[in-house]
Image (cartoon, rainbow, N blue to C red; front, top):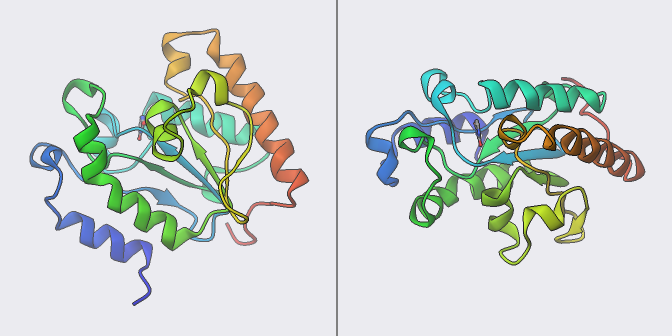
Length: 191
Ligand code: URA
């Protein structure tokens, strides 16, 4: 059976395989089902938990701005998280919570089939490359397979704690834009 994003949403809402699901709302990714570019953050925060949508708080507003800086729109891409529930007090997700939620990210990737995956920050990068650190790897493309490139970038929330990272994030998005252009990857036709 071919799964669609609404199927995933419906199945996740009935799932209780993560210890965080008792106290938080399920937040699947959202965006263009035909997206070639998939952004993956860490876990929902307070606003995301309230609205049941990813990246809709302060970090999300900055992410939207960064996407616009490439001449793309939020509706051109797909945005998700490694962990699908808000950890209490926005603490880091544990390795167990990341493992428990992993099937949903894998199903999202299998459904969308992105050409470029952008891990935002170390939790998400660790899903693809356990030995790379985000401070070394950000802003460079890594070929995962013939069809998929991983392009790590700092998490937008990091710039809220460390103002110096704001420019680094704009620089990385400019490199991502050049990489997409050189690869002939453009926003999907209808978005
Ligand atoms: N930070 C994340 O990693 N994900 C969100 O959805 C919001 C903030």
